[in-house]
Length: 247
Ligand SMILES: [Fe+2]
Image 1: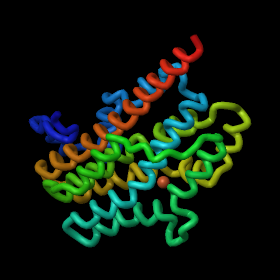
Image 2 (image 1 turned 30 degrees about the vertical axis):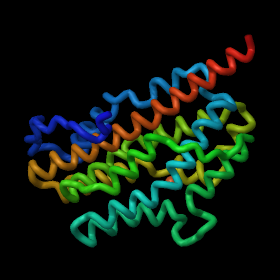
Image 3 (image 1 turned 90 degrees about the vertical axis):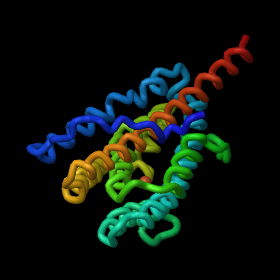
Image 4 (image 1 turned 180 degrees about the horizontal axis):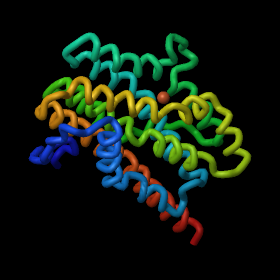
């Protein structure tokens, strides 16, 4: 089977000399929307049930545990300390800024417990592919920055879908909203995205840099497509099983 991170059409016209930050922001959002990443999960019949809380919660926990490692791998491969600092800044935030109890994967565990579902260590193909990609070779620092934006650009929908997938009743919803994890993650995602687009404009002046950046960006989106499709498939098979038991 061909890897999800191969085969990119780089023959697009990228002569966007007169684009400002707002035009680039729309350009990247428009590309991200084309992937329709959340459709199959949101249309699942058992979304917002205890089943979705278990499937989505555990898969997110796995991702959240992996993310600092991915960021450190990426940071080790960029060409300057300035670029490294920008990536490690995000890793540092994910790692609780020096406080072990504040590591994001750790604070997320209390959300899963609140939803009254068990932890499992079921591995995820999407997460494995992301790790493999981060361990591999990159064309350039631009590709790595592009991956950063691809992973970040749907952050708001990611957090909303994660929240709705977990919050299967109104009391749980209001308790989850107060957790440190959701308090942190409902804020400032747009600021992070703008920061990534500023990096693109600053560090990718030439057409070749822009192409590399967009390759990385699309790989980030491919990861999310795989991640949420995997969720939708598990929801479907869980639903079919419960339906079979009930009949
Ligand atoms: Fe986080």
